[in-house]
Picture 1: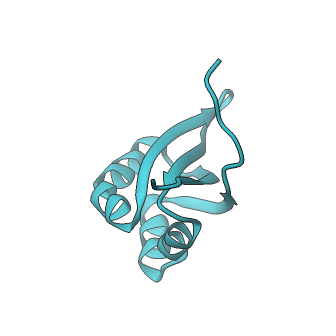
Picture 2 (picture 1 turned 90 degrees about the vertical axis):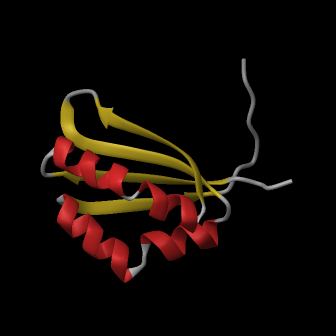
Length: 96
């Protein structure tokens, strides 16, 4: 059984629509690197403040992907400003 681990990324983008296009174009890269699920959210009153919450095969896979020179360049092209990466290990989950 594969244990999914999580990454929470909070960042501001110059333009959401431009960022979204780059994000979707990188879907295969993310999948090959180990991303298994994602959610994209925005701050209620800040349309360019984005939260990317994703499930990964491992924290090591996620860290290697997000910290790679290739992703640094892609983030720059997408207009990402000062991303904050939070790597999370699942302790418990449920549905109520």
